Length: 539
Image (tube, rainbow, N blue to C red; front, side, top):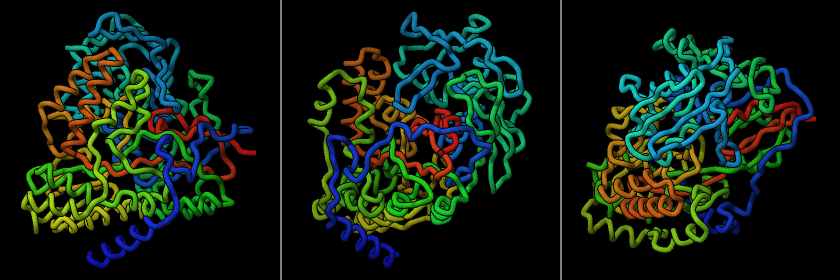
């Protein structure tokens, strides 16, 4: 481990002496630009092949809480509302909705929509789909989105009414993503535990339907000719997702044309792929912050002083340069700036005035850790060999831990096992830190901060702060934009003082399109928006 740490240190130190600079006003590096939409297709395709870095454990929407399952399901299943590539929300399977009282939401279900088996969508399907998140036996990863839901009921053949126990400013927004997914009630009942498996598949309403799943190799979607929305009808007859866990293999497959495209391009390949004759690399809107999750608050990282010291000892600018290909910027928060778009004018600037920042200062960090008395204490940093970026981050964090007197050990897991850290508390046992590229599913900072409330499924380290919980609760209950933003800002302040997670950097979405395809809109919304339907022939 010592050799690896030394190599990482040399790489990061060398990168810091480079000439690349970040444009903080734009929130991205000057070395690239964001693309809203790639060139329009010239025609249809029989099929295209897409690389994906890990095989999903399930495509059951209740457990689709990570990049691999979500980027597949976004083309197969649909939600009541739709999160668009420009990060706005619009009607979808619900043709309209209303909020007659602060605790009531009424959804008019779009008529004439058919599931992939030909049956017609009704309010019964919507009720069955949403109620699954309320059932403890389901163990839904989205249960926290329904924490204030009292009931979900049919109020007409094509109308569903949701009653809340108290006002919830994010509930309706969440229905544009995973929590609002609608599946056939009959299929849910028929498939049982097989639902979402290679054998059971899914039966939804999207532009593509589930076709086949060869475990360990690939998953195939086929065009659904009966899709209701002419604006998003699939241009390709088929999409084949191939599971390529090795980063080098993925990049080689893109360059050789073996696969036609892929999201989340390995950062160390940015240079090669930007000049590749095989296709084009694009960057788009993102809501993602790379962060180290503190998974164990009973060890040395249970002391907030140690967490602050560790963050100050991490060369985050060096990580951006060496690990993220120079594309991105150091994060001063656990959320990206574009999530504050609904805040009143002038509020965004005020949010940063008193926000604590943690400049790179190893000497000061070591002194702070010494005061906490943690010298020689061991910690375990879990990681996965996703790409060189994750390796460099992990080594830099371990180097920082050593610099403040801790004794880090790196535990490398397979990509599939690493995913279970986010879904199974038992899998996190013995892990002090693990890396996440955490994206929000709605355009609201509260989507991040409510994840850290006491008892939340996504509060992986079990952190608890009554003042933070109170601020989040006020934000949840505030429909007024000014009051909502103020409560969010207070939650952000406390989170950055206490650091239950350590923010590292932000980076735009990356996607590579081979020369035979085009049409995609590069955006983090690909996790919920049917991006593959817009891909067609290039030239």
